[in-house]
Image (cartoon, rainbow, N blue to C red; front, top):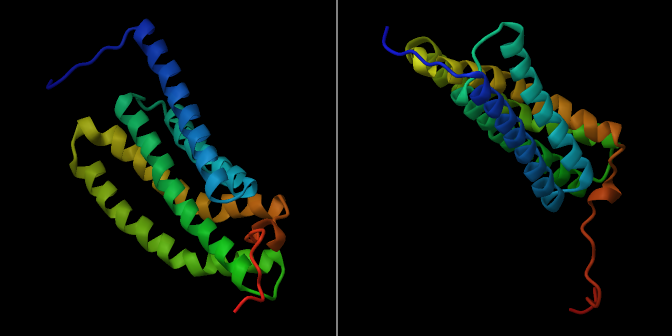
Amino acid sequence: MRQSNFVGPAVGEELTEDAGLALIAALAVVMVYILFRFTKQFAVGAVVALAHDVIVVLGFFALFDWTFDLSVLAAVLAVIGYSLNDTIVVSDRIRENFRTVRKGTSLEIINRSLNQTLGRTLVTSFTTLLVLLALLFAGGEMIRGFALALTIGIVVGTYSSIYVAANVLVAMNITREDLVIPEKEGVDSETP
């Protein structure tokens, strides 16, 4: 035996509370960031997608009774960061297309945006998964929980940034008018 760890009930309860608070704080900060960078529809979509990712990863650990420790918590927080980056790329393309594409419904513009980012998203996730699978199978027992949680999170985060976040935008009836850049007052458009 190389290592043995024991966490008592008081420490385990504190770990659970701290983990929950860390996840809630991360999601709150993400929502505020997206609110400033995009709009409330994008913020809600991103947080729903990130919450989905966290719940699925935690669900796997609960369902299969895998050990949840600090390295797994770090992996769940890393999943939030990874998925958020992917969601921002998709959201940025949706916003850009709403501003530049003149014809089409909201659903058509969102579909076009998703098709434009799908290849990049899949390739990025696939290359990340290659490294994670190497860590999972060859990294040893100490890093197995971290690699497992991150592997599940990357797979789930890949489809949630495309399908969950975008569907929330559709459900919230996002329109071109929601994304129009406001014109500055006092600027004369006829001045050469």
